[in-house]
Image (cartoon, rainbow over all chains, first blue to last red; front, top):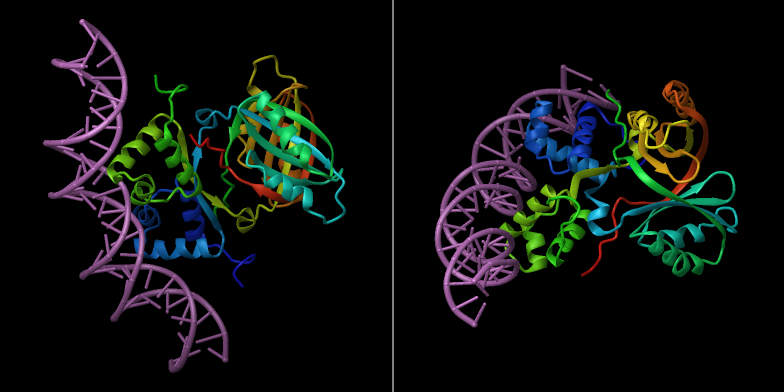
Length: 158
Length: 158
DNA sequence: GTGTTATTTAGAATATTATTCAAAATGTAT
DNA sequence: ATACATTTTGAATAATATTCTAAATAACAC
């Protein structure tokens, strides 16, 4: 047990909903919202962490503040065999790469990358991407403006 | 003052680095790492929040645990005029839409969407996307497997 | 350089919050 | 209904955040 099938009740869902919006909310505030004791909330949170429902708590940093102003998506065609994840792994190892998705269609990956600017992107592609053997081709899409970017998932009400 | 240009020193960067990985880290632990007093760390954190360097604290929820197993990227071609952000706004208003990026090239948006499954995606496109006037065409890419998905930004060492 | 002012930090005191734990309550299965 | 397991409560305790004043440091004018 303990991984895929863990049924979340109303209490769990409320906790998740609140913590998604503010990971530093305290147990008393959650407890108030739910009409239960803080210690019980703590138990729930611990269980949610253990069951890997809550994966991590992270601070969302303004990319511009740390000089990562350019966001790009890169489609990568790879010569990997079926089920061979080498290229994906190599891409994931690059710190500037935030996301690597194996996509349906043309044996490809969709990669999300943050760099300071266009020249830093070029440099990254020359230095890091070019070193990955199985990459056949890349197609880069530059983001002009991000209208919305949230990590939060839609939580059912129940 | 207070928005774009706020220079981050070594202390700020260390705080950011630690909080990115664990938003619930306590001030004493940060202080220990930095060799300074917890109260001083608190001041720094407050300032980083105020300056919008730290934007939010959020819990990363396992999408599968809340029945959002399908991740898709959708390219959307829109008939918006230059600088007209209506379509982007409309897309951003959809709860299943996690990201909306205005991309260079073909007057388009790249949208990241989470749904329970393929039929829920179809339903979402019929019900929500189809109601947005300026959308000319869409091209959907289904994610088979996510190799990496992090929100964390690369922090310079300084 | 000196003096002046503003900003940051340290450290102790206090307020909040997390955590523990035993007992009560609730749920589950037989 | 009984037995067993799980969850919750509420009070006690531990840990942490927060406040505040004085000291230290930095920034700046002269």
